[in-house]
View 1 (cartoon, helix red, strand yellow):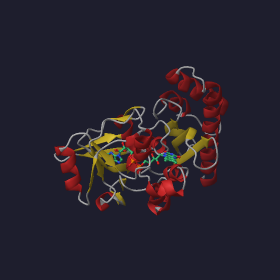
View 2 (cartoon, protein in one colour; view 1 turned 180 degrees about the vertical axis):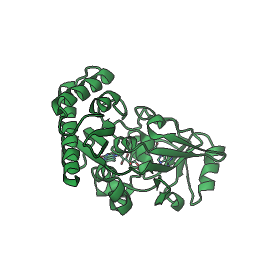
View 3 (spheres, protein in one colour; view 1 turned 90 degrees about the vertical axis):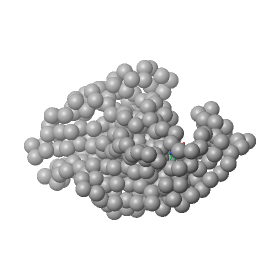
View 4 (cartoon, protein in one colour; view 1 turned 90 degrees about the horizontal axis):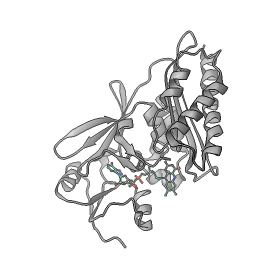
Length: 292
Ligand SMILES: Cc1cc2nc3c(=O)[nH]c(=O)nc-3n(C[C@H](O)[C@H](O)[C@H](O)COP(=O)(O)OP(=O)(O)OC[C@H]3O[C@@H](n4cnc5c(N)ncnc54)[C@H](O)[C@@H]3O)c2cc1C
């Protein structure tokens, strides 16, 4: 049994004040990761003296266009992501990833902010948001800072958030014309399934059918999601009509193993990551030919 004092608030300033004044405060959003960890007495949990429930902070529940970005408040649930036309239109891979999370109940409670701060290697929103070059806004009582999501991650289940900070907002830059995206996920079963492997792909295919600005980010493949620069470079500059997808598959498998080393899961993941990327590339190639 973990003993703690429980606070809840409807004001962001009050939440930031608690975080500023008190020590060993743990933030509670949807609770779908945290309460499981508390119940299991996970060794990952730091000592907790206070639980700060932020789920009533209405000010962190928004999805809105802003200049060249779409901004998402950290308390937006996966169910809200799925229903939002702005996201369906601009970032279908993010919506697809949200759709694969847990069950209806989990998607109704679990938030985008919780998914990012928990930073599981299998967190489904990390690969698409890294591939989209999303930024996170971290707010404390005295300051606000913005970090690229990829830099925010510091290891499996580790981020650079400070004890007095809340993740308040995620900013996703809009993609220009000629961009195509995809998200693929494989789990042990069709529903309520944590990713065994996933892949997020963002590419531009220019008027000459050449791949540009390639972003490949797998989930559950490396200790924590990160973009794979070797395979990105191998795809970049290739024509969609001449690209050798088998060769690209070999490159992504080798790049993954160069990061993880050979592990018990390698005989499964080595061919599977190649297949996932091939499927994603075939999908965007088909879409770009349809649009041509
Ligand atoms: C049955 C089940 C199935 C699941 N399936 C999936 C799945 O398929 N894919 C997947 O990716 N995840 C899955 N999850 C994990 C979980 O649902 C998600 O990661 C969810 O998005 C977590 O959000 P939350 O609001 O519940 O976070 P919480 O549990 O409230 O918090 C998680 C962590 O983030 C911190 N935190 C939360 N919000 C903030 C904030 N705004 N600022 C600072 N710190 C914050 C908390 O202190 C805690 O450390 C599953 C969980 C369960 C129980």
